[in-house]
Image (cartoon, rainbow over the protein chains, first blue to last red):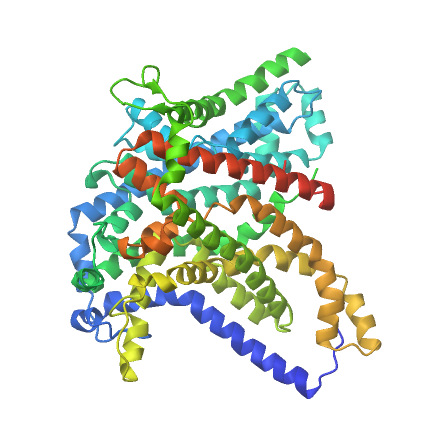
Amino acid sequence: MIRNKTLGSRVFDIGNIILLGILVIFCFYPIWYTLCVSISNKAAANAGLVTFYPIGFSIEPYKEILGDKLFLNSFWISTQRTVIGTIFSLLITVLMAYPLSRSNREFKARNIFMWILVFCMLFNGGLIPWYLTIQRYHLINNIWALILGGGVPVFNVILVMNFFRNVPRDIEEAAAIDGAGPWRILFQIFIPVSIPVLATIALFISVYHWNEFFNGLVLMNTADKYPLTTYIQQLVVNIPTGSNLTPDQYKKLSLLSNRTLNAAKVFIAMLPMLIVYPFLQKYFVTGIMIGSVKE
Amino acid sequence: MNKNGIQKHYYLMLVPGMIWIIMFSIVPMFGIVMAFENFNPGLGMFHSQWVGLENFKYLFQLNDSKSVLINTLIIAVGKMVLNLLVPLVFALLLNEIISIRYKKFVQTFVYLPHFLSWVIMATIVLGIFGYSGVINTFIQMFGGHPRLFMAEPGIFRQLIIGTDVWKEFGYNAVIFLAALTTINPSLYEAAGIDGAGRWKSTLHITLPAIATTVVLLGVLSLGNVLNAGFDQVYNLYNPIVYSTGDILDTWVYRLGLQNLQYSLATAAGLLKSVVSFVLIVISYSLSYKFADYTVF
């Protein structure tokens, strides 16, 4: 790009660099702020004096958390949910995407299944029927409610399906001539060539399972069954619900919390996300673009 | 293997997914019947009294329903507009950065908040806007009186829309940034030779080149008109700001699962589902017609 560097242009460049730098600070601030509060002196943090840097230094909250059975338990539940949920969703996504990526001639019922899937993606029965159905299955307080409750990730199925459609035909035709059946073609040809897409989707599903709190809140009855985000929602965010709450009461409630301990819990909940983020960043841009790939 | 033999395997592959979808998506749809009944959990769906459209009539007579609908629309539309414009401006500004390393550096950080749960983000928003939060610390430093931001109905919607843009603008810019890379650099060179500055080039080359993407994303977001964002509002609101902050989803949640008004909550949920469904179908067919874009 050839650009004449006028004075105005240079002023703009500098202003632009500074502005984007401020946005970077804005977006990193949530993590930095949480870390600062969690390692600060308790009194300073509770008084709200921690803003851009830690005041004092203490790892007391982290020590306390190591002895908090309920917290460790919810961390373990979230881990199980994320691992099992991701493997399960990924497997089913692939198994559905492959037959649906076939043409109408190869798989006659393809369009019927496609319409069912799309309809289920765009329309739902709403919160109450969904809740009562899961209750009827006796899955309340069961970790499988968390794994299955969100339903089939139809959008992911469509993503993988679109990718499978673009796999060159000659490879699979050659395999078919050699006598490979549909299962072998799927597992030995399609899956190996789609690793980047499948990695993207696996990361998206695990982020969903790690972050999701609402299903944990309504489908789990007791605190010892809560996933981590629900635990934090209940004990840290803890919105008052009384209908005659006054601003004064709200103020008092908000001053009660133990800020350093809460921040340490929140920071630990962020950690797995921060660890996978470099991988996530490598893949999700391609993931989003595949979503918009046309036939 | 003959053709029918292969088809059998295709069906087999679909079985686990179909069982999942039937159990957790299709079976719940039959529960919609409750919206037309005076549902009594003791009697069950088949024996509860049929009341036709009574629940819907009652919904519209409730005092809350009007304000809930207005709040939902204002918050949702505010988010739709700003989540389109802010990322667009951000992408254009980022596109003007010459250093590729600085570009990558900025991108690494702005995508981050999108991947944090609203539960986590809420603890930070409360830490900033709370009574002894960061902003009040500064207000006091300059001799002002601390305010209880989270309990002021007058600013709650703005707070919700603003914090959502904060969390999502980077991620929402990804598609714009991708569209910007497809513009042919020789266009800018030609414009430069013709004496066009950066502003003129942006106006006459960049914007027209990504206009389709902008319109397309705008149209596709149409289905969110009743989606004000449950996770966010639920983690930030409180009874003091119900008048401006209560949205359809939070209202349905309290009505149904806290006050156990199953039939009313199902009716309200059904209205939302139907309206959203119609809007999505319209937006998909519009984007197919004008941009030749197919989702599936």
